[in-house]
Length: 255
Image (cartoon, rainbow, N blue to C red; front, top):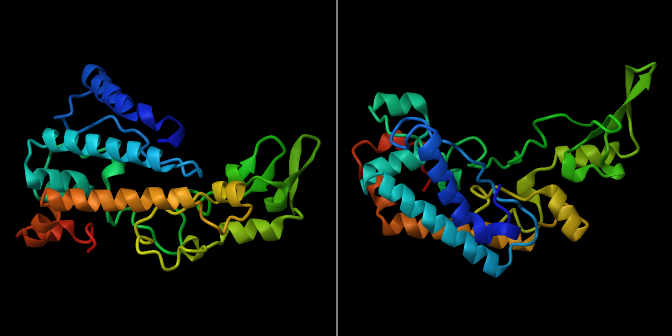
């Protein structure tokens, strides 16, 4: 994951990854690539300087991908946006799928085009259990006593029952929360594309998980604006809208 605390090292990290991939794994010209977790750590520490360093990383990855696609617009567009295996095979496109989700933009792809009722983490998709005391928690970042939903009752080293905790109401408030209805999120112009906030980070920063971390908002607004300008500069959007094969991008690209 890409954190603000070490963002200055990430261009070097990325180049190291590519170097080791070329040395130990299949070449990038093959179908498979070594992936990495490009999710941003959504702590409230993305200062303006850190965001600028992050945009430099985006630019570095973009330029690398553009070069790897032999500066071909169609190859770059499909490689970046179309990740459905059947569609790619239908059109005979066998170049490697980009494993840099950091470049995804306006994509109808699970976890990236963000439905209003869903979180972009596993908070409301998984059952979290604290192994230390077998308490049921929303996630590791919200494992506070007043957010614990319940616990497993143990007798003779066996689970015999599940009981509610005092924090059960707080537990359900979190896991059923609509992430697009937080303060400032409802009318935000990028709410459909934003990865939303980490509720634990919001709570730790603002003492209220409904209040977004301001620096994270700034990060994602800067990210999407940068990528939009980059794709316009390289004529990617215009190509998609006017290509005779533009149906392969639907519903991947959203105007």
